[in-house]
Length: 195
Image (cartoon, rainbow, N blue to C red; front, side, top):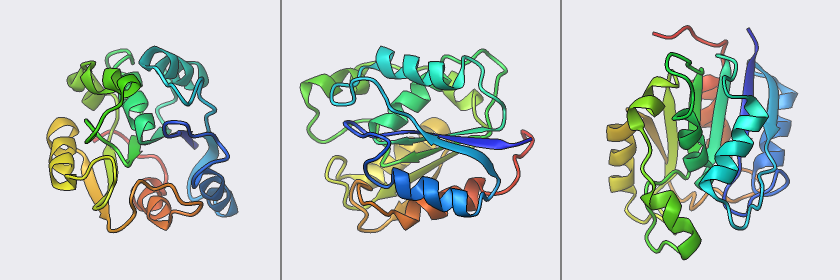
């Protein structure tokens, strides 16, 4: 079984911004268990909507993605990933999820961000849809300053393994070694059977 990685960018992100090009290149140099890697070009990235982004993710990977699928979200992309997982049919499980600069709320939400914060999501369905959740946070993210609370919420709500990258801000650099390390250390081997 070949594992595929699908990356959902941040707010206003594109496949050629941030660390996405670098990460794809690093994973292609030494596949590390991934048969395919792609960063999605999401609709209307400067004004993402829940229906638009969940629909685009569903169109890209299907309503029932391969069990060997790993989804990676960055910032609002994390919200798109978990909301997509809540739409999967009961009993359908993917290999895992890596959430980078993930949040449940932000310090100063702007108007078009409010629906992402206030619209409930079925956490039971989300938890049941992936074998494992790994969250990568920074201790100085300008959007979520209380990283201790943010960490606790990811652990409580999804049972996530939460990693901390000191000084990484919102993970917007052209190279983000902490993202590559988290991906390879938690998802870089052959796909696992559900425990």
